[in-house]
Amino acid sequence: MEPDLGKYRLEGDNAMYRLPSGIVAPVVTRAGQEDVNTADSGGAVRVSGVSARHTPARRLWYGKVSNEPGYRSVSHHHGEAETGGYVLSGRARIYFGEKFEDYLDMAEGDWVFVPPFMPHVECNLSRTKPLVWMTTRTPENIVVNLPDVADTDLRDWLNR
Image (tube, rainbow, N blue to C red):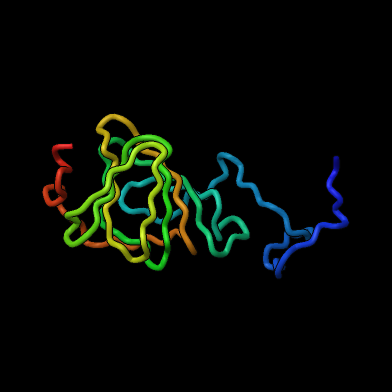
């Protein structure tokens, strides 16, 4: 059964999301057309599927992050952005806290929330397999790199 488009009504003011045709509609970023010009934290490969750079989105960044085996980021934070992540494949570790002495490990299927302005180091625990996660941020993909910390100062990193 076809929907009755005569009854279709937008809630709120969505004028800023109008397409050149004048209608408000979903915007699809096709595989291979993601935005690859994103901020990084020393080697994390980030591609954006939804962002202000290439869609009408104004308060959301959503992308895929890939890390090579043994990768670890430089210390960084994401400014005012709230960050959510989902591990698609691989094993991850996030160091945080005073001098990065605390960490949490994650595996495929795990979700994580990183608060705004929280310094951290993202790691791929595997020495042989890539780590892939989906990440979303509000309002944009903010990456503020900080002075780095030595591998030897990251508890349990060298003997993982």
